[in-house]
Structures are given as C-alpha cells and as structure tokens.
Image 1 (cartoon, rainbow, N blue to C red):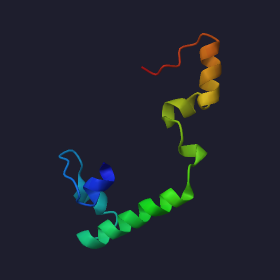
Image 2: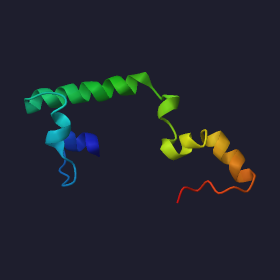
Image 3: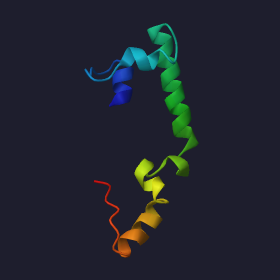
Length: 79
C-alpha cells in the first residue's frame, strides 16, 4: 500500500508522501521514478537475512532461537 500511495495511485492520510519523496528528488515526477527504481533494486537483491524477522526476533537470536526458548518454556511472545 505504501508504494501505491507514494506513486499517487492511492491516498492515505497518515502517509507523508512529500517527506518520503523528498529523499529522492525535488520534482515530484523525478522523485517518484527514483523511488520506484530504489524499490526495484531492493527487490532484485532478494531476501536478506539481516532484514528478516523483525527487531524483537533478531534480539533473541532469530526464529530458530526463539523456537528453542519456547520449547524450554520461556515466554518469547513479545506482547
């Protein structure tokens, strides 16, 4: 949804498109093209282990470690 808001296909009150797009250029059309290029390059990089699992899961050592802790009866629910 964020991509569609930043590329002007949708509107979303909470998304500050001007702020985000300002990182990619001064003119809105150029900024949108550069943003889409940036997203496309990220997709081409594929799934990166250091970005998977969220901060809380990474903080316990990843999903495997979280599962081990749970099997030991420890709470890793992050509520």
